[in-house]
Amino acid sequence: MSTDDRSATITGGRSRYRLDLAVLDRIERLSDTQFVYVMLLPVFALLGTMAIWPLLYTANISLHADNIVATNPVGEFVGLGNYVDILTGQANLQRPFFSLETPFTSAVPVTLLFTVGAVTVETVFGLAMALILNKDFRGRRWARVAMILPWAVPIVIQGMIFYLMFQPSIGFAVGPLNELGLISTTPLATSRDGLLIAILADVWKQSAFMALLILAGLQSIDRSLYDVADVAGASKLQQFRTITLPLVLPALLVALLFRTIGALKVYGLVEATSGCNTVPTLSCLVIGLWNGNRYGSAAAVAFIIAAVIGVLLLGYLAQLRRHERGEM
Image 1 (cartoon, rainbow, N blue to C red):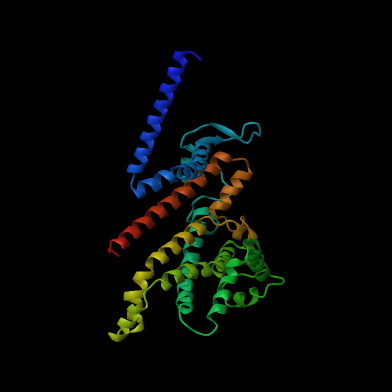
Image 2 (cartoon, helix red, strand yellow):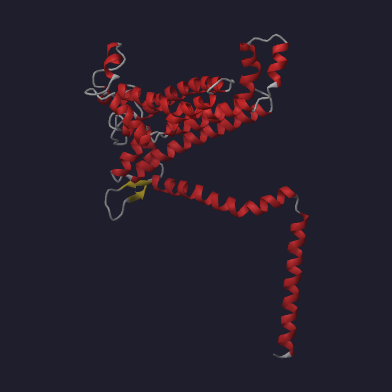
């Protein structure tokens, strides 16, 4: 090695050494919070890519026309044409996207009716079960196990249970409910009855999930607050309104958010009970379009669902901030 080469090697090594010292110096100047963010940056980048890439891919497909040709399943670029056709009712779908004239056979009304009906009843039942299980009584542990059991049942088995319950030939629930005028003699083949069955099945399973989240919030409340309220002469109803409800509200909002999102995406339960032809939810519409090689329309409907869920998430975060600031 010549003298010039040796000098260049030494100079390069010193430069890298100074660079390493500069990097170490910058790291040492970071606060603990900044250091944590720097260490987590690769993880955030990976998770962000995994979350954003499917959305971008779906959005791109939704801007292209349907093409049933197997060699080129994505058609020409049409911009927002798929969205306009779907929202204005011009798209040729298996079931109407939105129609108030036929609410039980239209995707949006069916999904909204299912979501509002199921989540409302689940919230009431879940709150009631959580309040009961938050008390001290003999057998509370077994009561909690019994509450969790329906939630642990797989969706397919859950759907089969309610399918058999409302099967006209063998189902024990058809006769009594038909006598009361609540369902027809063939409930699984009727859209209105099928929607009611799906709501009942979802309430049976998901009320336990609501109760678990609300119970976690109840157990975080300081018990001394109730002792002070007892000394002050507050009734149980007053304690619930002034102590329990405000303090359990964050957990209740989380439970409402999770169940609302889950209800808007319902598919497996409907398919396992009455079927998507009887109860056409939005997810059923997406699956049907996708199976028919109508990828552009399917992606557009899926993106509409994602947009609605995003709006709900933003609304939840806004309510949570208001609660943290004491505005609720």
